[in-house]
Length: 158
Image (tube, rainbow, N blue to C red; front, side):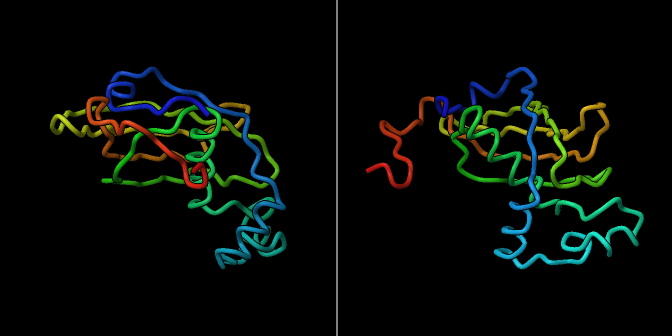
């Protein structure tokens, strides 16, 4: 995992690209069992096919979770202290076991005070042919470098 990113790092950051990512069927089954989100379009190929889908689809909330986790695991965590806004447009279904990529771009960055800044980003999820599947917009409060804690400990690292 990389160094923690602060407001100054993300305010004028270039577009970040990640992938390929695969949301596997086994992971989908485990999360559907854990979260209880067993709507038939997510849980049943035969039901999904009856709705003009090729097979069951990954829930939108899971798309946000896996892309956010991927950024932290394969990029760097950000010193986020709060979320202001979050919204997604789901353009095409995302199927399990299908590779996808995503980009995150900084749309706007505003200094709030000496301690915090606001960063608005757009995340675009797309397939190998460049077709967009989802577009997420998020506004988060992020610590400024001057307000960084002197030590950072991740849960379980004592």
